[in-house]
Image (cartoon, rainbow, N blue to C red; front, side, top):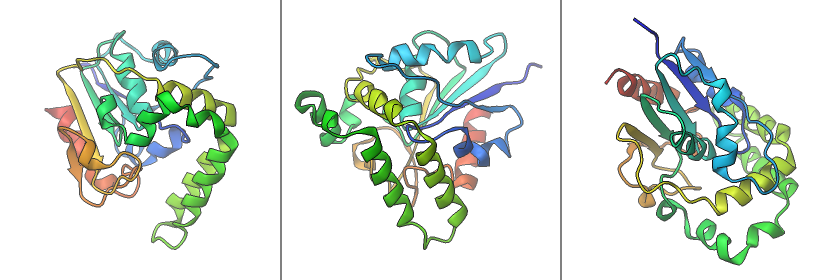
Length: 219
């Protein structure tokens, strides 16, 4: 029996380290790091760069967090995973908060540099220093600081203008946190909701998320 590989795509200001709780549990999990994102590229253009890193001779599942979920959706235009699993992501423009949807027309994001986004994100993470898991907080801060500012700018432009496919694969699953402030759960349709989960729910809520992943993979 052939094993099923689990390819994990990180969010915008993150890298493969965000999937440590999944790598430690799933022996066939492969966490991918971000690749170069050139000015003017669409999410579809960017997603295709991952294809050479995915072994299509074996069954595989795609998992994507936040922007990584959007990339995973775009990948399904070109390759056929057994299942598509979204974590703290969105499936349509209607699931975007109003601010991000309006950026497409108002171009507000073009007045915000990648370094500004990095600084803001770092300060938000630093406010979590008093949380019970400082290791997670420190990881989030380090991933943000290791993200290239230009990558953030080019990716943000692509996200703001993203046009998701009108039809998703039948075997699409969506796991979302009830306390996700970036993509509020009340806008999300047909998701498995993790109570108390935030935008990085696979880290602090790793046990529940891993159980859900296992159930989906084996279904």
